[in-house]
Length: 371
Image (cartoon, rainbow, N blue to C red; front, side):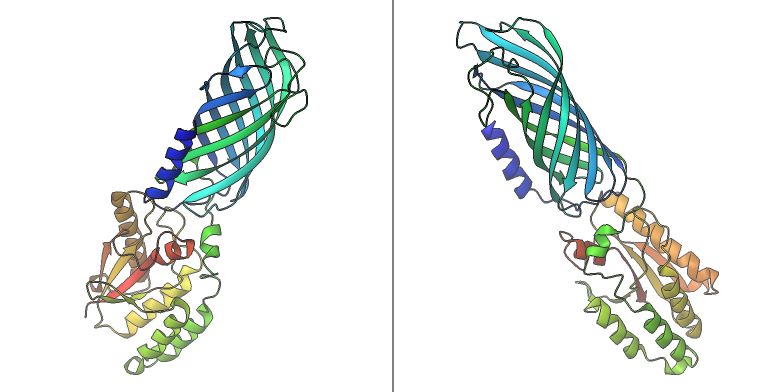
């Protein structure tokens, strides 16, 4: 078990992964391999085994409740008889989970809960070999999830479980659980996968953590400046507009290939969709006004994403988002022949995808003036 835990830790810190996305009110399904170890009056075998199925409901980005069914097999050598003791247990559990870093690739969590137990004893030394139902356990667990695909997470967990009986190990009396007393207890190490079967409604929690990027942009000021200069196209002060953008975006976007583009700060989309959010419309309305005031200007609309998901999926999504922006500009009177679109996916990041702030900057629309 120690070697397996060490392997996971090395794997988690060595693999380069995509970023995680918080689930606001979705559902997740998990499947774990479990290695339990009994603490009581018997000498446990080196490795016991079992499995776990988890159904987890998210109430917020950090808080969740889970329901789990475990199969656990405990084996050991009786201290009073030369026989191999076995306990085959089925556990029906419910627990509350708190996620500490729901926006990060590796998200540690902690939880508490309780379970009802059905178990069958064989070769017990001081208890009748039989099946028992109705005992309960108090469960404390902690672990972490590691995002390696859009809706897939690798999961590791360690739990401590105290049973409300002294016959779970087949012997009454004597040594108790891990922390003493007469009640039996066991720990379990779990390693498995979790898949989000339903992400629920769109969450902006992670984006809002990016230093309040969207919340701090002065859209009204940008609109005021653009409207003021758009009345006299020849006198449009693009340097002034650039100063406003720099104030909120920190620096101009200059790519490695030499392209210097404008980022439409505030043009955002629903998660994993090409649907514009409400705050996007004033920015695009101003962009349309600038284009109408400069009829000779031609623009390539570039869609960009962060690195969540596959490269192919990101390219399709970024293309669809660029087409959405084009359709809006055309609806405002801009000649479609002046606009081209391209989806670049996650191929041109302008910030670090490993942080929430960097991912927020990378999900963007850029204008490249081609004439």
